[in-house]
Image 1 (tube, rainbow over the protein chains, first blue to last red):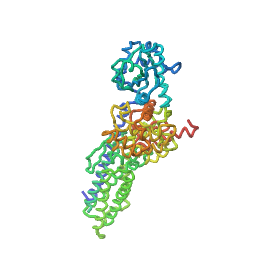
Image 2: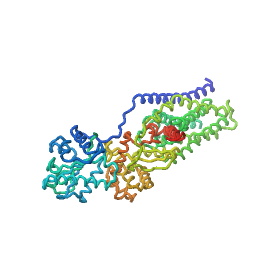
Image 3: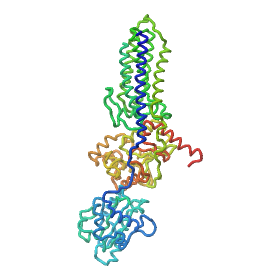
Image 4: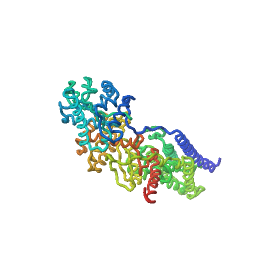
Length: 227
Length: 399
């Protein structure tokens, strides 16, 4: 082989080797792209929460309450009377409370003085904490109660005003335009689903936890159910 | 000394081949590891690194606005080093060289040397160094020095060889042209992308005032971001250096990938991102009166110290809050509070309302989503087209 032929061979080798590599790499990228187009990878999409505790029964209650309380259709009055609550729940008081047991970490119980509807400072703070812990939940339930002292009618009004006190504080503090669509009020007075001792261990605004003190309250929780 | 030129050219060819390979593999629009080591072939890295930053920077390729990803400068380096290998090897095979041929070799090795100086300066501008690139710089310097020494050792009276500098130059151009043509012919065509087909915002409005004004610009755009997400920082850098970013009137929606506030992720992918997001919102102000400049400062600080903040959050979240409050006193008493938590939830729910994928960053230009595959190498190509599409209706009477 002459020196000129050797030089030419070298030039061809130094040209063809990188050319072959570039061609192979390019073709490989082209094939991979075509394959990825045929089988796109699934991507999670942002959505509201739907936690494991959202049993069909709980969802049914939430759906009925949300509808009856004016959350789903924003016409008519806001809130559910105790009689409505019994109807929409279609459950005994004990079973109604049992539905909310999985919410132990999400729920807050704000307590009131006897025959009073004003939130104290601790109560206000707890209401704010509860509201700010929305995460992916869509409905904020306020279930107000009264202890059995006094007449049933008076206790119904008392529990209604306690529920409204929570809503009013939220409106004043957060001025959130979506709040109206998210808060459901339920007032139970003294005659349905009274809270039992087991709720003493839940997140509450006061230390005291006799049955009467526990039920002079408003139970608040974001419900992580997609209904 | 010609042997020195051959050795340096060979080393340069290997490094530039690795860099070209890394670049081309990304043309399949997927995520890959990168060669990031002084030892050729070693150290493939998948995460963020100087090599990745340099590769994704607008300086790694040319004609990015016309070709998806552009033509990599490493490809031309491969062509030039391969050519130098042939050019320096020829006199070795022949057994002698002429003064003119040696002089041409000095001029030819001056090209990679000049490019190395330029690209070293650009790496300082980008703020990242690529080890494979450093390999090419060293090879370029080595080839030039060896060529100069070979030229000095060549006697003016040495016998002339056939060929002329013009012919040799044309040969070099041929190397570059052939590899470029082959690259364009074999790599995926630009129009195989999904630009403009990756969804759109259905509720772009911001009734809860959660958006952060990132920068003013002509075309409205929204970026969904996590302040502690490295990809978000990288996109921010790429947008700033591409020039096209100047067109965008950019607003940010915070979407921390941190399970302490984001129910859509199972774990804290970026620990502390919720707290930092709260600080950004606090700095901007939770009332009607906003201070976007203060929010931008917190965000810039978070981008700058991402790794440190994530580490601090992993060890002690309270310490992270204290760090932010010490650095930005205006957020004191606000971070961790009920109102800012509520605001951050609104920010996350904005993503829910628009059914966005759970990932960051995401860029929307006039409500149209920039495909995820277009946020790095294809940014200029795709953004140019999205901006043109955004301008088109405005020119014909608006939307």
